[in-house]
Image 1 (tube, rainbow, N blue to C red):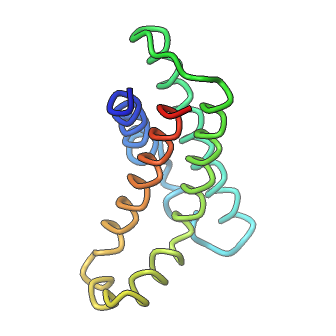
Image 2: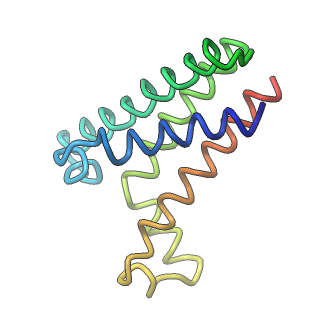
Length: 131
């Protein structure tokens, strides 16, 4: 069940991060202002909502059986980690402190950002499959 859950969450992630993210969210979610926190929260909320729909469809159409509490925890994890990573400073801090500082100026932050999101999705899918 893990691969199917991961694929569903990955599709939800792509939809939320690219097709459904507004310009305002993209431009403001990293700002340390009220507008920035609201943009980050709205964007993370989109991830939670779209992921919930994907999991619901997986249960309905694919017959996946997972516990509701595990799904709720996974969705909270997805929303929380997404909001944290997308504040951008965690990615910058990681790259600066792991020997990748020069790669930031060459577009590497976007790759590290997406890798962090995929790791979080993998943890959510594993937890749901295990519980």
